[in-house]
Length: 122
Image (cartoon, rainbow, N blue to C red):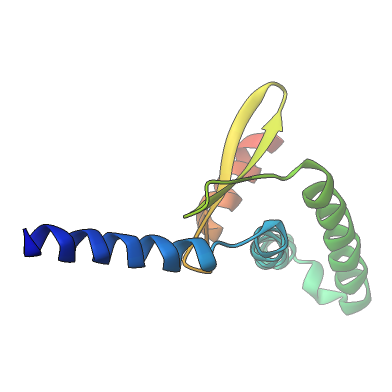
């Protein structure tokens, strides 16, 4: 009986910690913006825009502004108390883009995002 009570107490404590540290929409937006900025800089470097720093700076600012607007308007974050899930709905298809738990946001990797951008270009 004591083992069951200890197990129940541990589960309750872990649940309470997860509830208190569940990330909100702003945390999901920030994590996705960081991911986008890294991917955008990589894409600009591949195209060779870094040769002209002024153009690269303008392109980076323009891309960041557009991404921030899209993320702010299209990101839907569902809070499940112990975790939160960020998703986009594009052309009727739902895509999970981030998962938040214990005050940390897990997103797709930069390579996976770049691969999806390449697929979208085709």
